[in-house]
Image (cartoon, rainbow, N blue to C red; front, side):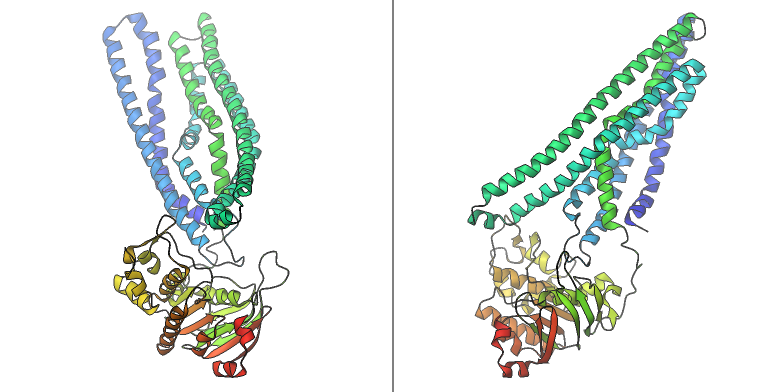
Length: 558
């Protein structure tokens, strides 16, 4: 079952309540035309003051009930938007954090939060309420027809005209709204990149050119949005004009029928009120075509991101892994690349062993590390942990069993403690133990706020080496069975590298499997085996002693 269907099932109960409230709310609205008919057809002729008073009290009570039901319905519909936020939000974040074959974020990921907000806001907005009230239009039309067949025919004609305007509005606004959405995604992505790489832009004098490019993208987006808005406003005004005309014209038709003694005076006003109520949701839908189309497009992008996530079903929780890793003829090619980054890689690492992978730049070392960590899914071949395909492991269990330090250190907004704890419920003892294992504890406690030091753009900057040690502590949280470190000493000084080598030796003593990507000899000495890669292929595996004896500095220093 797809996340969108699960969300609909979760929202079915509240939506049933919304439908129930709408039923009684629309029944209550019938009090207004009935009041008109009683006043003009009975009270005016009988001049009964008491009757007028009682009728007024009854209709006032009905209006109070109407207001209460409308308010409660709005609150329940807001609850539906909360369900959308919770269920779809979880599915989207799960999709963005799961491994795939592309090696990067899904193409629509930059729009994900805005799409979720668009759908959620529509679910609790006036546009959704208009669609909820729309099924009552035929009932009101039938009620008008009961007053007089000609009034019913007129009302049906009016409804058809407004429905046609609604279809025209949708078709007129669809293309510019889709175009605006596509350009907006590029503009938002480009703006995010400017903020992320501001230092590069400043130092190389790219500020003006980047600003011009961003303003150009924003201009394209605004042009498309303005065109959609112009069309929506024109058609909205046409819909309002048509509704007002029909609501007034039915009074004239009713008066003509009354002149010929075919209709009472009260029925004239009752027909006008009922027609206004019939056409109101159609007019509201026309007026809300922009948010409706935006929600439709956003839901389509969410469906593309989330559909198919459950094809494998719920994984079976396997025994806690020992740490045996195996690659069987594994290949992976980046999108739009001419050659694979890894091809035909086969090897086996026994639990407790330390393997260092060396090779020149772009040899495929980081790709192999990501494949072993489960950050990438291979195009061909299988990566196994304790004999089981990585894709068959429970994601949470695999996450606690594998510690991964990527080449580009990725720390998330939050405190140092949050990042080391992986934003989970790890205890303080576990966080401190991981920091000590990474030789980062002393560095962290020297900071003014210690483990509570925030890691965000507004916080005090940490050096590259400090960030790398924090990321290493995160990888070591919970003493995982497998630790994969991609260039863990890239930003470390000699003391930091010595501490890292000691950390690797401790992993070896605790019989933890470790895979290291490095260019330096210091970590090779702490390894059991060394694998050499060249142009995406693993060209050889030897013991660390054999590798050092051969004195291959070119492979290590490249």
